[in-house]
Image 1 (cartoon, one colour):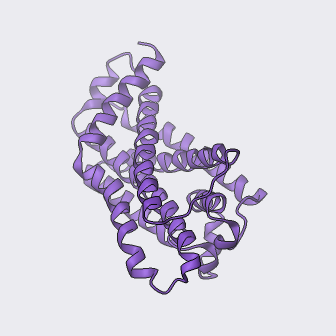
Image 2 (tube, rainbow, N blue to C red):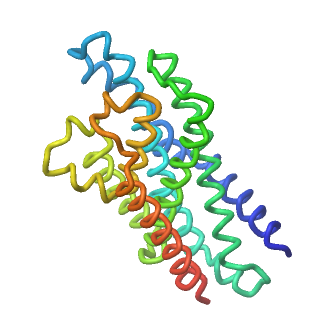
Length: 258
């Protein structure tokens, strides 16, 4: 079986599980949609009307990031742990299947599932009055930054799945990490963050990537700083590469033991 065939088979299987599992759809897609509907009514009542479209636009970006984190850091390790409980890896170890190709199929699933969910959230946000302005030349940059965030979060998901054996524990630890990341640098624009949290944003690829997309779609003035600087970009790319490669290596070594 060729590498492409292995990636495709792993992707199709994982994608079917993600689309059929109500818990995955609920935690990854429905919760961000719920927040997108409810938070403006709770938090945005005193926002001046001229700033409301940009504020809703930032919320849409934050909900897309929340979706990506939930998919990659909670549902991905949960599904891997479930497959391990069902002895899938014992069977795959006796077959001509490469751990790397099988893992890449799971990563493609995270990309595709995140893309589908993001399209739903963005469409709903635009209907609710969010303002997201992206030029034709900026769109590839948005996709590139989002891809780096997905690779980083997927790497963390692989590490969680490789270290935590229980399906429930893997999923819940992922949820805890998602919430920590969300509240330390994604829930609010950089300008509204306490001084204590601002240094953490500059060393967290998820926060950096979220702010980069927000700067492109909502504007640097609303965000409060320009994340497209050499330090932030270098940290994001370096940590994303290290974490993803580490996750792929640990996954191949730990999860594929007979």
